[in-house]
Structure formats: C-alpha cells, structure tokens
Image (cartoon, rainbow, N blue to C red; front, side, top):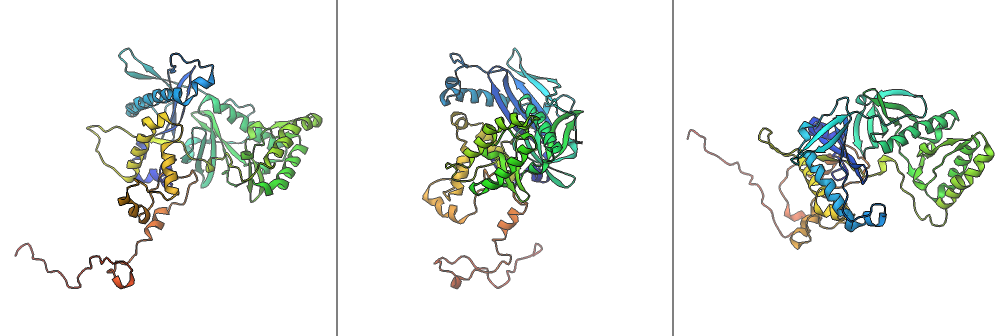
Length: 434
C-alpha cells in the first residue's frame, strides 16, 4: 500500500491479519458518459463494479476547462467517494471468486443499492498465445500498484504482471503480447524484459507475466549505448514507437525498453527509416538534449507508489472488535482517502505528511512540547515510496535498544537528569498465606 509502512505489504498482511477478509481498492475512475468504476481485489480475486454516471448541472462536459477544474471537480470526487462508502457497507455480501467478474451497482426506488453480476472478457489478443499459460491462482501476489500493474512470485521467482481487468488497459495488454512476439521473432528479446507467460483466470486471458522490471534510470552518459541499441533494433525492421525517457532502463545486461505495446514490424526499410526519423531519432534528440539535467523516472511498477488501499470492514455485533498496528494504519488511510480535504485538493494529504517526515519536521504537531520527541523518537512510517524493502526493517530498528538491561550510569552521560536505578537488594514480598 502506498500510504503505509513499507513493511505493510500484501505478503506481510497474509501473516499478520485475517487476510482472506481484507478487500483492497486497487483502482477506479469516473467517466461522465459511462459511469463511476471501482476495481476491488480480495484474496486473489478481482471484481469490477460500475455505477451510474454523475453529471453536474450547468457544466459542459465537452469543455475540459470546466469539468476538470479543481473547483468543479471536487463535487465529482465527493460523489465518487460516496458510492465507495456505500460499497463499504456491502463488503460482506460482495461475491468474489465466481464466474462473474463484473457487477452493476443499481439504486433502488427506496435509495438503497443492489448489485447485478455479469461476466465480461476484455483482453482480446491480436495473435495466438505464443508462451505458456499460467493460472492467476498459482501466482502469489505481493504488491498491487493499480489495477494494471501487479507484482508477485511464481515458482520461487519474482515476476511483474500487466493486467487487463477493464476495457482501457486490456487493449494495451493485447498489444504488449504482440509487441513481445515481434521482438522475439526478430531476435531482439534481450532488449526487453522477457515475457514469461500469459495469465488466465476462469478460462480467460487477463494479463501477461514478465521478469521483474528493475534497472537504472537513463541519464546523459547513456547516450551512446541507447543510440546503438535503437540502431540495432531498427536494422531488424522494428519500430519501437515509444522512446520517451521513462521507457528506457539501464540494467546489468544493457539497455532495456519498456512499452513494447507500441512495437511495429516493417518489411519496407525505406518506410521504416522515414517513420524512425520522428519516432526514434527526434525523440532521442529530445531525451538527451540540453534540457536533460537529471535522470528520468521509468514507468515500471517497482519505481511507482502503489495506489491500492484496504477498505476496512464496518464493526458489527457479531464480529469481535480488536486492533493491531496494521489495522490501525488501514483505518487511518481509509479515513484520509475519504476525507473532505482529499476531495477538495489535488495534492494527496498523506503524501504531504510523508514529505514532512523526510524533511525531519515534527510528525504530529509543531508544538514545542513535541519537538524533542519528534527528534529523538522513531520516525512514523507512513506513505513510503513504492519500492519494497527487506522484511527485516523492524528488526533493524529494534536493534537500537540495548540487548542487556543494565542500570543507567550517570557518569557516562552529560545529562543532568538521573533516572531511576533498580536497587541491588532483593525485595521480600509476603506470601498469600501470611
């Protein structure tokens, strides 16, 4: 989750919480013509929910300056989060793991809501499946950036998943499969992150699986290596189609390119050369031009903040009420993500809070009574970057505390305060029968 400790990953939540009952909101968006969309994930199962569109009176939605302004768009956010809270009340009745992967949220005459389930297939491949197929149930999901970018472990190996759980991204998944196939047939797969398998669920192809997208961001000193790689690819009749700075990574094996969904093959090399003038060399000239003052951030999932968070279940008389640090963090994230401040502003409040932590500002307040605690205490782990860290972060923090509980020695400290020291004599306590 983006807005929690780096250790609060899906993999850890499986061990520390009642994971099978956790519902994640992994994506969502609003389309003024089609409706409001919510993509949910629960214990390996995906359910997408479509609700009625929300249109404000007096707003011309064909004029983007009106409908996307901060002042006007806040009401759209409030309407979107209102239905998300409605779904929170329906968590115990949502049907995950069935043949139906889609549901319509329908408002009844008495202003209550119900769900109508159906099945939709989005990924329509442009070529036959040319790799092995892997069931989504056989992949241990460890992190979900959004509804399209997932990370997991398959047969002991880390993998990245590009998923098409709705109509928009499913087109890119199909194009990604074809692009990798063209690069593989041309003998250029070493310039990409190898596509390992096609992922299916309930008999449908829903995504592709590739090796982890890990590499260094491109910088000015990589100019010669990148130009040589693009020239080699073009000699094999391939047009990459997308050479933006964030589509290029430098790895130990060399230059790698992302966004293979834009790859095209040309038999006519003269036609390819004409296209490459603008889509290859002009783009590279911009990338490595005088304006490039620092490295660009790639679009791989492991360099991005995760947009998924848990929708907490509402308390009920039949459910025991208990709390853990993980559950408290989930409640905190949910309360902020559905707050009025988040709906009114374009800057995420939790990201601002994270930035304060990185700059060393007080975590809770600017009150002078809390400044000493903010400097001496541990940092509040909120809103990390998306890159996962090792599982032993808490153990490293705990090593700060001495392993041996020894009395405080005021002579070795400059502090004027002398804390309580335990007496060397044993305390004799009376027995119950005396």
